[in-house]
Amino acid sequence: MGKETLVLKIYILLGSATLVKNKSDHLFVAKKILLDKLGEKERQSALQEADLLKSLRHPNIVGYIDSFICEGTLIIVMEYCEGSVYIMKFLREGSVLSHKAS
Picture (tube, rainbow, N blue to C red):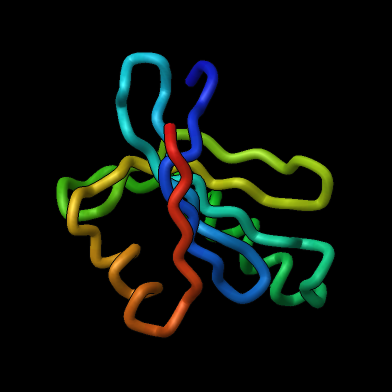
């Protein structure tokens, strides 16, 4: 994906969703899940989510780009959908929102 620039970060319990863009200005969402903070069952569920998203291809499902684990954090990179229900859900549930300049 190239070097990413932080555009928007939404904090959720045990992780965050970050809106990033690559050098070509394409937007993506990086969902970060703190695996170290999860029990074994929840950790397995998070890893299964990444596997499931990887296998799905449908016009009504946000596209999977990549996933990997870095320093105890599962990162799932997905397509960005403007006005995304995914991001709006976090905003409605009282998540902390912060902006940084690109």
